[in-house]
Length: 110
Image (cartoon, rainbow, N blue to C red):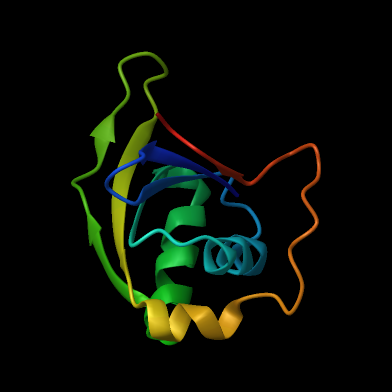
């Protein structure tokens, strides 16, 4: 996962690299965003797995767009918007700050 802050005033983060759901959740918990957006190539199902985890653990609500064809790749893609339940997400906050490797799962958008 990688999260970018989309605007410094609005508390929205963008999640990238959805492959490891638990790592994504732990890192999202270590940030203070109220909304996250993420996209997924429909055939990968990473977005659906993350949404299922969010629902199972009552970590907030997720809005899903209709599936659309990316005109550059011809792949079907989908947009997700996660409205975070901060109290429940904080239960996944690491006891110590996460190790930030070169893959940087959370990134700030400006």
